[in-house]
Length: 599
Image 1 (cartoon, rainbow, N blue to C red):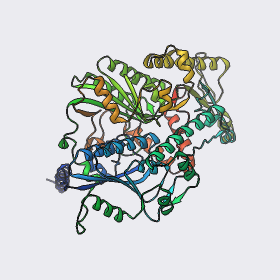
Image 2 (image 1 turned 120 degrees about the horizontal axis):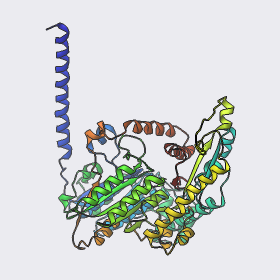
Image 3 (image 1 turned 120 degrees about the vertical axis):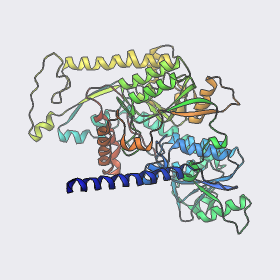
Image 4 (image 1 turned 90 degrees about the horizontal axis):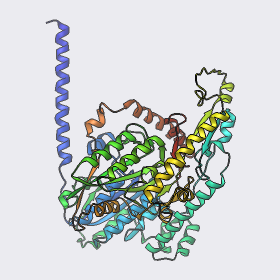
């Protein structure tokens, strides 16, 4: 044997030995992480409430501990509260509230879960170092609210910003040739106008007022004040902790240690006893089964979060925004439909919409699934435009009063780059065969004939596809009745219920109960929730599968990294532009007309 071969064999042997050692370590780590921790009696569960709170994240303890994957999802948070309510070892819950990036519907859903926990009779306190309107709104659902002595409450009221970039595009020589159906389908206006249109102004003012009224009313009820008093305190904000306590907004200006002392007294601890605390990460490892929960007939839960696109979904496990891929969601619904053990399906939607064609594929999957078993849609923060399209055929639609929904409308566009090309010295010439072959060329606006074809395509999709399917699914008398509340108008869940777009209020837990009722499962029986598609293992997340387009995932991560490096105020517009860029030019889009962040 040559010396080179000997060296190669030694290197291979060392690599295999290291791989074996690493494999053994991983096995031991997995075994230790899967072992349920010991929970002492009369413990306090310290529940972190912070971050973006996506509806669902597919992150196990290994990926979160060693690779920083996010585990703090809304569904996980709600599950911990359900477990703590049933767990006799948990004497109380302390909500440790940081900055919350989720929307107002998710805030409402957390408040509902806290209210349900309080039925157990166990104390639940909230603690903040500081907070804004949304953080305070969540906090007020707890029995007692505390802020650190040097903390502040920035409950200044709600604001939404509308930015327009027509002036910038004019300077660059770029023109957006677009067509939108409906007064309120204003998505292209971010690029085609320099100011706010009447439709956009009307929608934004309506949504702000609706959310503000509910915020004030619920805070007033929780803090035993009048709505006028709460509004006066908002107008006088921000408040430091001592001012907030004096005004009755909070129960105490205390440091965390002092709040824990209050809990010790409440739970009957001796003075020399140490408070037995359980962290969120520890408590996640307690299975619902061990507490007698999540047992019985199967209810499938399909999570659909992000813009709607063709192909595979991105769950955001290791970067990039979550997206709804029609292939992934259709397969999940079909698999749940064909599983005889699954008695009903809950489709959880958190989406501003997306491309029309994949939205229609998901709608059709819901229609086919309904022939075999109930399909209930649970609306999260957003189920608008294409997000409403995939929801409208469900057996029942459940939404929070502050969900943003509707936006029933369609638009399409193409950028005309001729001015920009002239500016940078680029010339181009099209060679075509077929009258409309150059319809989507980037150097010219639509001709009259091309525009007629372009608009006719969108009109057909709106009048002959979207509206009739809403009428059918929501039992409207005719298409014109739907058009009266459509035209791209965004509604809150409460307004949507008034207009027949939503059946009842509630979050994911309520949607599961509705599915249980429709499946005729006895009220005194529990159900087991199963996720479709099945969560990917750690190895699958790292190495992917044969059918995954890793290149597109990497491109999305790079795109989001670039956008996140921009000034905060510009990110929403560039996120929306990046979303548009992912769709093929000329594709019909059903997207919420703005990225709305009300703070």
